[in-house]
Amino acid sequence: MDLDLIQRTFPFFLEAAWITVQVSVLALLLGFVVAIVLVAARLSTVFIFRCLSRLYVSVFRGTPCLVQLFIIYFGGPQIGLELEPLTAGVIGLGLNIAAYMAESIRGAIANVDPGQVEAARSIGFGRGQTLLLITLPQTAKLMIRPLGVNAVALIKGSALVSTISVVELSYTAQRFISSTYKPFEIFIVSALLYIVMVYSVRLVVDYLDNRFAAR
Picture (cartoon, rainbow, N blue to C red):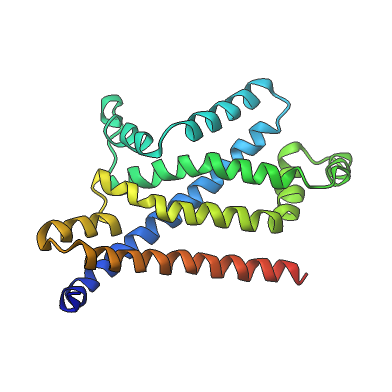
């Protein structure tokens, strides 16, 4: 094993890992917001909203994330939407993970006591207010683990943005492999950094889960 190569390239991998973290966090935040909208639409009394929510989830879960990224980044200019690679990557990953997060959130909401919802509606809360102020806070504990799984999937899936020239961890690994012809050392470093990121998410999830369990 070429330890000197690992030492020389490690600072570049740290920079790339930071890009991976930024992409993952921003995509997760975007995905969560979109997921809340999808859940609200799915629970709406308006038929067209429910249909659009189901269609969104079916399309984004039924097609590869890579194809979605290509459509946004390469297809966008054809309709006047030119995005930087990083922006396109965040949007693509965020819209994709939103479909999975919506199902996780909807499953957690299904476990809320219907009496809580009825009580909120009886004092004048609308469906949106009930969802944001009553239902979601009560389902927070139930959503921690599923959303943690989605976050881990997002971190590992962020490697796909390398295909649209985002200089994140996988892109950096490929670049060094092509110049050094030593894939073993390069992949070892990138794999270890991915493990650190995933394990960090696990620690956060465990911490939040324990905090909610203690209440």
